[in-house]
Image 1 (cartoon, rainbow over the protein chains, first blue to last red):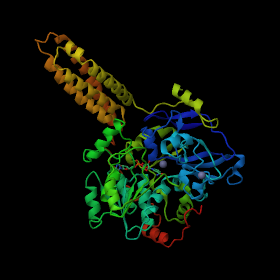
Image 2 (image 1 turned 120 degrees about the vertical axis):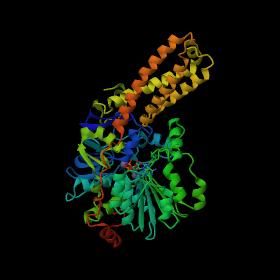
Image 3 (image 1 turned 135 degrees about the vertical axis):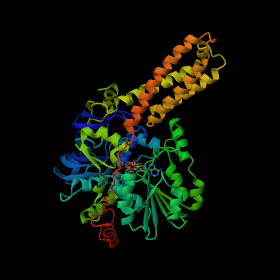
Image 4 (image 1 turned 60 degrees about the vertical axis):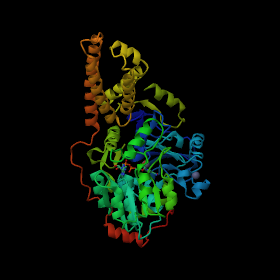
Length: 391
Length: 182
Ligand SMILES: NC(=O)c1ccc[n+]([C@@H]2O[C@H](COP(=O)([O-])OP(=O)(O)OC[C@H]3O[C@@H](n4cnc5c(N)ncnc54)[C@H](O)[C@@H]3O)[C@@H](O)[C@H]2O)c1
Ligand SMILES: [Zn+2]
Ligand SMILES: [Zn+2]
């Protein structure tokens, strides 16, 4: 079959690879009908996430038709079922899964030792990601094996298109969890950094969860226009002072809730000298991530507010003003998304017509155009916001 | 299939797909040129750092060893930057560095310098490299910049088929399930 394969920094190719096979009785194999490129894939593309190996298959946002099931699936799934696959692999039975803390499932990471060494405790297995999270082959491919498939799936009805449900596997619940963990109250202003696909979902989620107003920050006009379409007041950080605007829009008090949908690769610019400092340290291997957004959020957030971080960080960050955070009494909520905790509710909202996540798709192409689309998405060319691939 | 593919194929679990035939690289010709120039930059930088005395001797620039070492450090940092995802910045810093090199060499290209011929050779070499640097910097910038096309306007993409107000009121009325009720 064909698959998008990581060969090194900025080198993703459409390779001919062998077909996946059932290994365990709880495995299933799907024929991928749609998959997407995620902002997290860009961190791998740039080789900022440690423990990727040449030959790893990319992709963790995918859906398709079940073509084969292992003997232990016990009717939870059958051939022909149409499923979205969450990017977090879950056993459904461990202590964490029972608490719905799915992204830290205790059993699904098959390279637990590696994860424990680096993180202290292993986290869940993830598709198409580093070997620290199991190194499971991803879904930017014609076929994919789903481990623990009896738990690791979201069944979707035929009445909805792929485009409407695909993002249930990642960015929709990610934006949703980011907003939900802010415990939004009707008087709250929610400020969201980054208007990429995750930011777009977070904006709409915060509004559905009842925020008084949502303020969205980015520098790309096309992304800001989409943020405004979703109901946000936009701030272009290349043209105006983020801190001043946020204070102005909140009567000088700052937003109660701040969400980081940017992560470790904050834009580097002369106007933000700390980003130059981070970039230099990153190059000398003295720091992994560029936490400009975290610093800005801690500074501007209203005391007793919440900082919610769906944006991915990979390792060590520097110059985080813990003094400000501590004295202001801020709460931090973060993590890889517990996808299946939210998908029942979110699927229902899509079916009801409350929201249609397909609004975010700007490019749809075949798998062989995938490598080029990584570049287009990374370089923000052609007003690209979200790429869907049809294997 | 590359050696790396072969090696990692061995380590993969039996049911995992393995690379049979790698597809074409999506890196452009200018990306590859940039890559080569980066390594050249690092190598030259190391030579300048450790061989500053010999270079100074060969070019009749005794007393300028510190400057040569500083240029070496500059070459190395430009090289590292050009290898990174910010290769545009790295390559343009190389172009600027070439300017400094040429100015320094021109100053040494005096008639009373007994090593004038060597300086001439060095100047010719730097000129050639500068040309490549400019080609790579321009090429990479063109390939990876957002281009001149006007950003698209997505203001018709609300994502709420029935409008924001209706979506908010449906959400408020809680006609949806509790989280986790998959
Ligand atoms: N927690 C999870 O489970 C999870 C799931 C999916 C994605 N993610 C992460 O979420 C983040 C965003 O993903 P995405 O797909 O939207 O990526 P993206 O790269 O498309 O979007 C990032 C956006 O941030 C903007 N940005 C950069 N610097 C900024 C700054 N200083 N201030 C404001 N905006 C800035 C960029 O212009 C861009 O539009 C990534 O880090 C990704 O890895 C996390
Ligand atoms: Zn993702
Ligand atoms: Zn589990």
